[in-house]
Image (cartoon, rainbow over the protein chains, first blue to last red):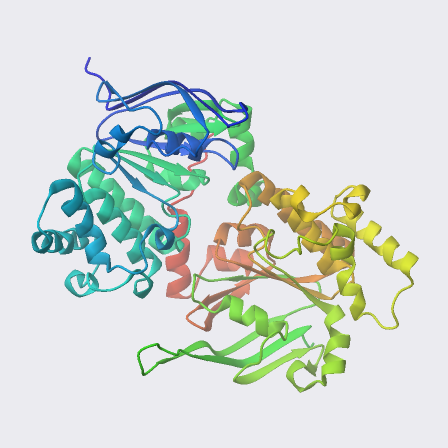
Length: 264
Length: 266
């Protein structure tokens, strides 16, 4: 059996004071697969995502093994992350407006990664950026490439962030609450877009979300996190329809639609 | 029967100044009609930019409209003298989304909750005011020693309890709650929704409950109004709207939401 694209073995993260944030997380993620990570604030889901991107806040320490394609990921803070982050592991965050540079056109921000990492000349990178914007279905890509982030809608900005992440064809994309700031009608479109790239590029996708409903729609497997532990993990459909862990049961019972049905 | 709050033909235009010369205009509200009846929870749903927060601010007379009227118990709010408006404010209060930004971090919780009492004339004697604070803290499920503590010592859900205690201390007839549970974790959200239902029962307060989340509105509202681009496109009983939406936009919203339904098993 070949190695999974991503293997996390007993990941432990501690705060500067030594307080444990993650208590030994293990997971595997294959190419072409989408893993949903669900949890409430303080569950450690974002800290895990940051550890996988080599972006743990200063002073935090990590232990355990992180393997990408069978090779160990660099230690936190190591310069070796430059060859991994952005190139092999792409990232999409919740707030596209804060993730984008307000003073640079959207097209140039997509092109910049190609110039920096691929030594592509700017004019070629700009053409490639327009093609990528087209691929993430930003309409009138040519014209919008020359616009600044504040001139685009929230959905278009998030598509632009996805284009930036996909420009370097990462093997793994980590998306932390990628649709939380978006209107519900736009959320589905963005999730569909991510699913399309998972299928077309054989990319692996990890979606971190507080919303089990989003992950029911977007992920094949799900991991439920609570207070730095994995409460349970399994096929999304199984976990969400027949939750084994009391915490998952409580989380699902708190969903407003379920409350509505249970109450009255 | 006249409604508690009667909004008619409400308009709000924003000039959109541009750094580079000519600015376009933008109409946030295009003639909105809406009633909130005594004691009901009216859910107002819509996506970003639909105008729901603009409507909330105008319903609370925190801003002036460019046309139309807002009547509270038959009284036109924008025709009132400042003194009379101030007097009336004890009857309509507001709760905001951000439980961090809406509570002054320098003030004790007791002082924050007591703050709207200044709207009551003649002022309550100090002992009576303190009793009211204690009563409200109990009503929202916070311990009595919370009064002496400060906002940063509380979680997001507890802060929304503080905001609700503050909003209800003058026994208002209407509370406008703008995305009051959107920033909260699911389990905390459920507790705050239950609390709002409980407070409505205890004080017979009407709520204009604004949210982008249809599932949340479905679980709490008696009636629902759907807003899009500055207009109310549909209003009706909650069960009717969710079972039988008439407007295309309502249908599109419900379909988008249904995508995130969990196929609850047996």
